[in-house]
Length: 242
Image 1 (cartoon, rainbow, N blue to C red):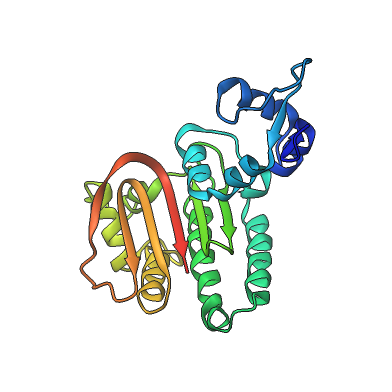
Image 2 (image 1 turned 90 degrees about the horizontal axis):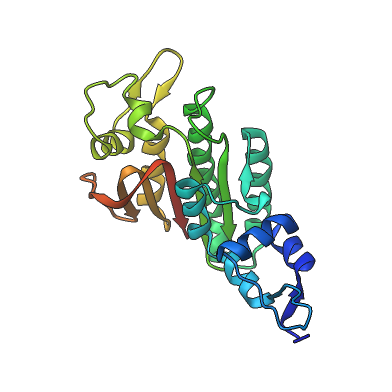
């Protein structure tokens, strides 16, 4: 066996999925194996496994749009699991030997925490599909990705702003206005906080809900540039860069 190849059991462990799942991925062409023995046993390239796990945005999009299976360590089925993994990310960020990063990494945690908490609080008891969120991060790439298969920003805000017509209007309201719901809940505050933190720090944010998406970075004006997305995602998808 070539030095770069590992068995299906080793690949399943590295990908945090079952062997049966890996067999299905092979048969569907999603993650093909290498069969180079007379018996046709499945082997996998270590490099291919590393690349697959590093493409967080692709994994999240596959999960929210097509229901593709994801490695279990990216899935937080409830807010308590999310908070534990968020704390782990905070500890790992704090341990990075980078003085510049140490100055603002709490902001990365705060923004990720706000987006993740929004998903749970706004879909509590009303998840239209699979409950929970995708949450992954890559400290080498300086990226955090979150996604949910919830109702999305428009349907959430229409409970208190029924006049909203589309996803672009809803996204603008969510990032710029405080929208009061039934006391003591206030909808729309979380993403306004996110916008304020991102535009005043060294972070970047891509955010999509439904058919609307925006990108934020330091120095962005109050007049948000929200554009029509090429593909519709009912829930929310966010990528934080730092």
